[in-house]
Picture 1: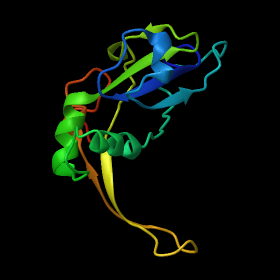
Picture 2: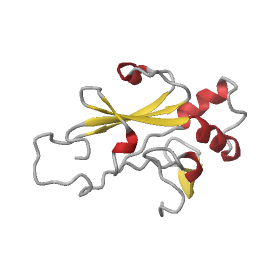
Picture 3: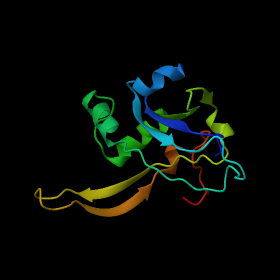
Length: 150
């Protein structure tokens, strides 16, 4: 509802085009989160509803590793890379851009989690501890900052 209708949040890991019409196919695009909202809804304030979503960054980080941009997938290597190169942009459904800093309820957060892969196709992976990486978004418009409790 903060966008007064549906829209998209595009997450990038690397340099990307300035042209919003190119964002859905940009080589640095890690993923897009689609926001579904009725543009004709009335009686709602922009911050009345909390919507959460996630966009996995692993595939884009593996690509960065394969291209020699990072030496490993270890957080000690990945976090500085994401701090420098992680960006996001917001567009309405018609692809018109909106400054992420003007979407006062937008909070982009980066976290990682220990995962032990399954030993067979009949088992599930085991998920361990989660770790916040506020430094990746701190100070960026729409990003979680230190002290915000995430």
